[in-house]
Amino acid sequence: MVFDRFAFDSDRRQLLNGAESVHLGPQAFRLLEILIANHPRALAKQELYESIWHGTFVDESNLAGLINELRTALGDRARKPRFIRTVHGFGYAFCCELKIESSPSRAGFVVFRGQEFPLQAGANVLGRDAAADVHIDDTTVSRKHAAITIGDDAVTLEDLDSKNGTYLDGVQLTEPAPIRDGQTFVLGDASVLFRQSGSSTVTMSGLKGKERRSK
Image 1 (cartoon, helix red, strand yellow):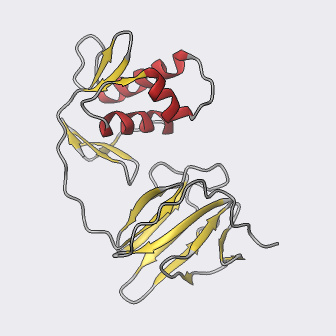
Image 2: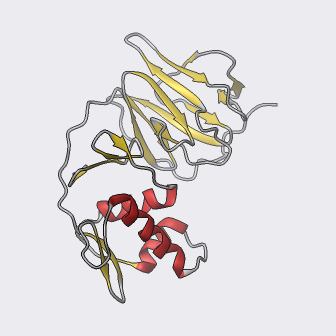
């Protein structure tokens, strides 16, 4: 998704200003993702609270702080907004024109907590780092936890010296292992489903910790 001089990639968890990456905290990135997905609709503050904090009580200043973080990163101003418009007494809206940028065809995808993350041919790093190819937002996952490598003849899963390990079929990986369409693997306590390109979409919700690692 492109707007003004920025490119927003939800799958790769990136916001680019030209060729330069713009740093956003995970919650600020999520807020921008929600605003863009609902453009140009104005979203109520309560709707944003529920989407970001999932029913957890937070002070109203938390949302205002995230809006300020976004505006600072985008070079936006509240009084003359180019990107984020304040709807007084209600909430916020993304107000910049959006353009859809074509992306390369995916060679497969993984599903984590009901969300699909595309995989490209070659190595795809999975981890908690926002700059990882697949961002797995879980505290038991290392910043660069594992890699899925998609080759011409095989797909392999490899642990990248993670703290809590990578598990396939209940076995901790010590070297790259082949992975098949429809297999679930575990990073720390986070369960992830692998699907090859052309497979039907499977929705999985709340898969954290359902497949336990063997002792």
